[in-house]
Length: 340
Ligand code: ATP
Ligand code: MG
Image (cartoon, rainbow, N blue to C red; front, side, top):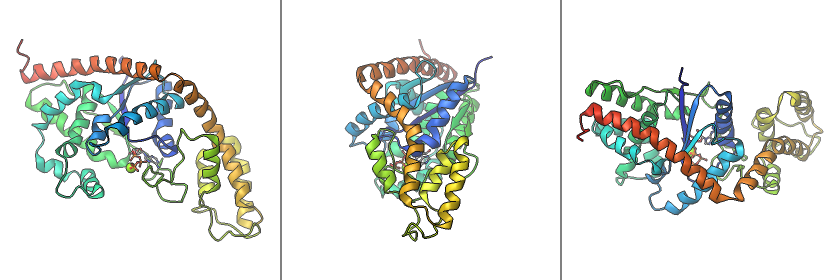
């Protein structure tokens, strides 16, 4: 029995933060270590270029940073194939063939793309590469014959687009060489979504309200000390609110089983009055540090030899390419364009 295949990855447009960690990285490491799946994890630099064409240096830097983020949280190149999208030309080639099966109107209807176009303020100057990025995602997913793609709910239209392409390709060319993937979604809207330090609904790079996995201990301390709590909890003896208080929200997310009694006691004390924010923040810092310190240590180790990190990416890209080349060859045979 072959194992189900999982494809997952990130756009290398900066460093990863705690939102990425609770939203996806942690889960990837668990899936990897369960040993029930074959996992491909990739850095989608081509996709990042579709809306950052003039920032190729930032993308280059992010490749190294995100690779370090991956290694330091425990993604293991001996268990998962970690690769860089742009190093696999087969993906671009598959994209070409799939583009002929998708109408422009269909691309323009994609609700996620529509929202993004508005957010990014492209106006009339939408890069055509950006408009077709859902097709390039279909190429990524199908090249590895992925069965499962863990993504946020906002990515549902992308999975649907991929499934349509698979059906259309298999139908058109009378083949079954492409596999229809399933999305693996969070249980409910907002599940796995970490709010920002400032209380905003989402920790996000561009909002500048996050803790990065690469932040040193002192930076994390300063950030935690500045977290949004209860603006009406001014004096220590004032009763405080738990709802919307980021310190307690994070304690709920990062506290383990053995911390629950302490967290509960703190909540009660805080609501009654007499517990200051500095104390709750110090406690949260301990909890976060327990999670972040080992990640930080591993990062420092890996960062000593970036040459080795890039070797790892090169090897991962080579083995990923072999898989994609096999799929491309099946695709071309199905289309009858295998001339020689
Ligand atoms: P930007 O501000 O540039 O949009 P970001 O910090 O929001 O950056 P993205 O690169 O947009 O990060 O996020 C990529 C993916 O990471 C998202 O699709 C989502 O799955 C996950 N993610 C981002 N932020 C969070 C968060 N706060 N909580 C959980 N998951 C997140
Ligand atoms: Mg975002």
